[in-house]
Structure formats: structure tokens, C-alpha cells
Amino acid sequence: MAHYKRILIASAVVLGSVAGTASARTVSGWHGKPQLQADGACLGESWTTQTNNCSRTVGLFYPLQVDGSGNYRVTYNAYGATSANNVGCRFFALSSDATQMWSVPVTYLPSFGANVSVALGPVYVPSGGTLNLACDLNPGARVNSVYWYQ
Image 1 (cartoon, rainbow, N blue to C red):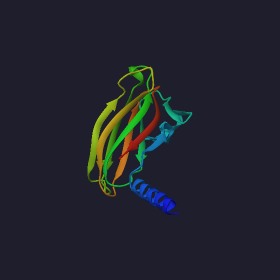
Image 2: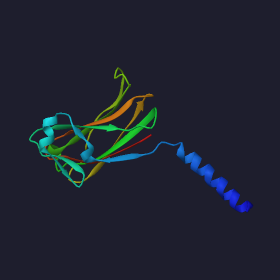
Image 3: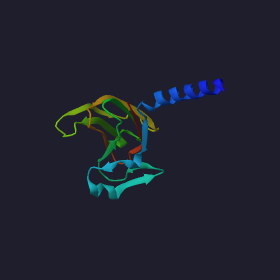
Image 4: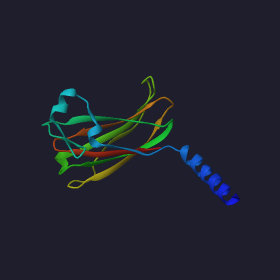
């Protein structure tokens, strides 16, 4: 009986220590909201990716859920066949009243012709603040997924 009590206590300690940590999160590319509502008509979703089928560059915004204040990092996975099909994303946080901003510069795909993951951050999110990813997709470019963690 004492053996089972030790296992139960050890399990509770492990669960308690894991429950307090922030989780990594992922969303599919099609979760992006077009900056201009009219651009939604020429965006294409395929297997939960988001492709720019417009004849112009389109802006997509991803609001990212946070578990609390602190530094966050994001990785976006995207595809561009050539440099004419580039994707550039900026990662930023806003205070709850949108009077302060923390950000990193726009970062574009480093290579073309294959799916590429691009890591950004860290960006500080204050208590009650919001975390966002904004991406510019050239015609033919695609966002596959967005992954972020604290």
C-alpha cells in the first residue's frame, strides 16, 4: 500500500509542475484574417493552408492566444516558388490599451521552392496585452502554419 501512495504522490507532483507552464500553440495558415475584407474573395484554402490567389500583395493577420505576460517566440511555415512569391511576417505585441508596442522587424522567406520555417522573436507581451503576427503574401505565396510559445 505504501508503494502505491508514493507513486500517487510522485504523479501529483509531476502533474502540478507541468500544469503551471505555458503551452506551445499552433494554428493552420487559413486562420489568418485578411487585412482588407475584399481580399478574402481571392484567397485560397487548401488542406488548411492559405494561398494568395490575388494579383496583388495581401496582408494576413493572426491574433495569437497568450497564457500570460512574458517573452514569446513564433515560427511561421510558408512557401514561395520564387522571390516573386515571397512571404514577409512581423511579430508584435500591444498593451491592452494599444498605446505601447513591442515588435521585431519584418522577416521574409530565406529560400524558395520548398516549405520553409522562419523563427521570430522574442517579443514581450505585457499583462493583459495581445500578441499578433502580420504577414504580407505576394501573389502565389502560401502560409502553411503558425507556431508560438513562451
